[in-house]
Image (cartoon, rainbow, N blue to C red; front, top):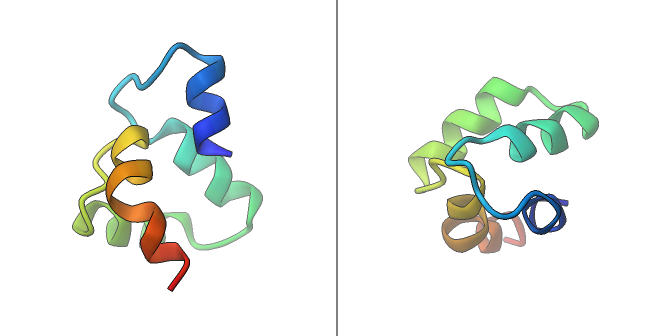
Length: 58
């Protein structure tokens, strides 16, 4: 989802907008997950893909 949104919108705007949208659609506690994402090196949508995505697969 996040990678598709970044492609559609000419890349990262250095926010977590698309990550937040994805989490809201998954109906999870967004703030708890975002805190974890930031702690794992995901300060923006592109960093989520580069630094954190593989952690979701664990």
